[in-house]
Image 1: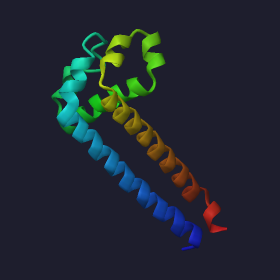
Image 2: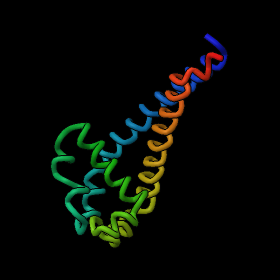
Image 3: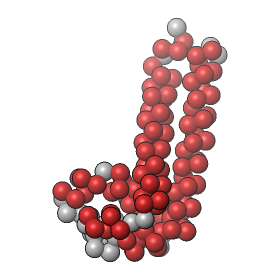
Amino acid sequence: MTTAEFIVGSLSGVVIVALFICIGITLYLGYFQGEQMCEHFKNSSSIITSATHKHSGPYGKMQLVGGISFVLTFPRFFLKHGIVNAQDIENLPIDLRRKLIALQWCFITVFSSMVILASLWTSGVLRH
């Protein structure tokens, strides 16, 4: 194993740990603040806060938090298509809104890192 392979492998381990941390935070928010988030999106489309998300276990909680955090991170798209009400976004507490936006960007960063590291590993660049 070369030094480059060792570094990429170590970074992959860090990314996997970061992924589990993000999943843990998502589950925490889904179980303990999921109802609060749903209350603030009453005027928006039911796609965001579908009852199936709330009552389908851990995966449903992750979908609920992921959907709401995606809406908060990229609101223009959802406002443009009439999926979300602008007042609902404004009524969400600022601290919760910041947590959800940060969580969404963490997931984007983790998945981008996974793709980059996997591409490096499989490309054969590290063995030369």
